[in-house]
Image (cartoon, rainbow, N blue to C red; front, side, top):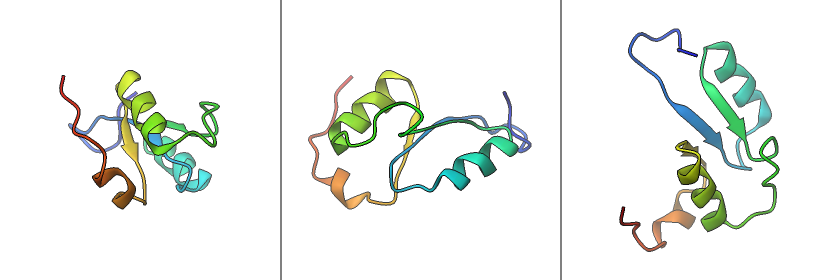
Length: 76
């Protein structure tokens, strides 16, 4: 699905701190969005959330970036 913004396309994964209404609003705009609860990942660690997003080729959207800054850098 494409967004109503020309040239913008992203698969998003919303962390637990993002309200479900944000997922709803993004879907209305054509974004491919999955929330933590929809994926059955509620309660997983930050590292596990990030690993899920990477495995699913999704962009992790979170409000607690400071918790991710201390993680080791991934090498692909």
